[in-house]
Image (cartoon, rainbow, N blue to C red; front, side):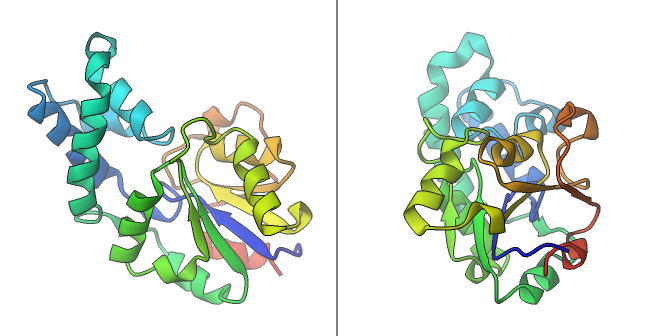
Length: 214
């Protein structure tokens, strides 16, 4: 077990299975723009790198000029439907409660207001001291600047921090900031996506953090 005082959690694919709501919101955007809807699996494969990138990939290069309008439409719709069909992954609430004395944060490429809406709707927002979202599109995961800014602002020790996520970008973020990483196997990412990144820990259920963190 390791001494960890600060835990950074990704949202989509880590805390929350939000794929249905994101797919519904993006297909709403495509319909509103007079475009053909995309299969769920295709849209899900675009999740993780921020709303603008999600919109651009869903629109396709031929419709890139509609990106700003698409982001606005997505934002308006998703704010109202952020947890219609989203659910917590098993043992998430139990694990957050178990670590109630640890400082916990959300680290996501979502806009912070989207993350807040989903977490509040699912009843777990208050477990987190703060939400660090992808509002600054010049500093998104996996860039090391994401955690570097947080550490500078909050005077958090890197060697007592852990980032927990389901995608390669979460592990890359930790590696780029010299922070220990924990990959969850049940989310949106696949083992092959890690490309030899070698996370420090691998778990198949959030509850397994109890065996890692003291």
